[in-house]
Each structure stands twice: as C-alpha cells, then as structure tokens.
Image (cartoon, rainbow, N blue to C red; front, side, top):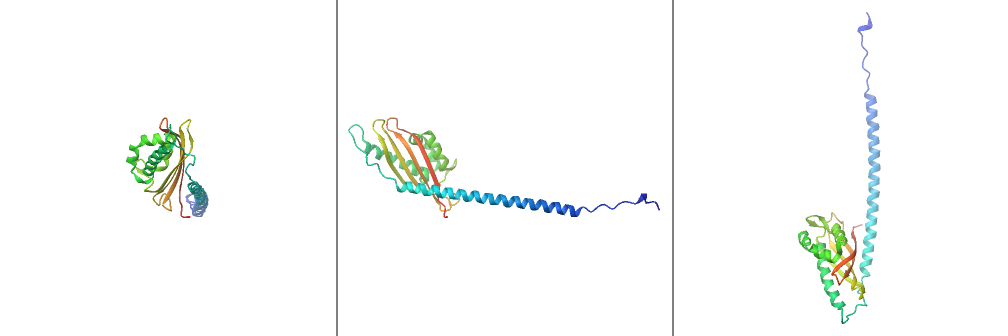
Amino acid sequence: MSDRYSHKRPQNNLPNIVIIVTVALTVLMIIACIYMWHNSQKQKALAEQYARQYTQLQEKEANLKPDVTAITSGKFDLQGSEKSLAKDYTVLIKALFGDASAKAVKNAENSYLNHFGTDGWHDLKEIAFANQNSLVATSNSDTKITFKDFSLKDQTIKIVIYTRFSVPKSKSSAGYGIAYITTTYNFKTHTARDTTVQSSFADDN
C-alpha cells in the first residue's frame, strides 16, 4: 500500500513548554528576591536616617536656653515683645500640631504667613497636613519657644521653636513626632522670614 495516505504523528512539545515555564518562573522568583532585598535595604536605611534625625532634634531641644542678653529699653520693650510673641507662636504651633482642626488652621492662614513667611508656611504645611482636610498630629504634648540674636538696629529677633506631638501608629510606630523650627521675626513689619523646619517621627526600634 502506498504511504501517501500516511500521516506523521504531531511532535509532543510538552516537555519544551514545561522547561520554558520553569525557567520563566525561576527568573521571576530571582527578580522578586532581588527587589525584596533592595526594598528591605532601602527601608533599613530610611529607618536609620529617621533615628539619626530624631536624636539630633532631641539634642537641640535639650540645649534650648533663653537669651540672657534680653533687655528692656525706653525705646523698645524687648521682654514684653518676647512675651507677646511667645504666646502667639505657642498658640499657632500647638494648633498646627495637634490642638486644632485642619479647618481652624486654614482659617488662621494669614497669621501663619505673618509668623513664618510664605516659604516657611509651605514647609510647615508639608509636614503638618495629612491631606486637605486633616492634620497629621492628634494632640500636642510639649511646645517651647526661645529667642536669640536680637538686633536693636534692625528690630529683628530669631525665634527657636520645639514641639512634640502625638500621631497615628501608621505614621510612627512609637506614636509621636517632633519638629524643630527657626524663624527671624521683624518687629517693624510684623512679619517673619528665613524659616527652617526640621521634623522626625519616633520609631520603637
């Protein structure tokens, strides 16, 4: 009989497919392991960075001291002005970090602009606001205001602020953070400039 009617059996490619799938899965697992290792190293580095920042801010807070050169002159009542500023800054900072709502803080935005300047207020909002409608801090446990470098000629003074506040566990495993703020206030214009803001969130580790 002629074999023109005969057909070749289809070749079984199953072993090749299994090998390809196995190799592909192995490559994916290797990539996943590398990514997880890299991510863990990144998280470790961030944790160490936050720990260093937190320690530095605590050291700054421990060294806060009132300006012993504060004077009261017939032309300018420095002590009275410092007392008034300390009250204003304490209210503003405690409100921003735990003692008020986001809505109340937004309503007082002009006061924040006057006391921290445009750039300073922008930096504070980046830290203090969780979103448009809520603040990061849930309560304020400690706020300190100190003064230094008063210039009678320019009628300016540098203000140093330390604040500690409670935050949700999702933000900090220890449940609180701190901020260290400096600004230069001008008594002539009743505005501030050159504001710097440092913050850190505590970790149980």
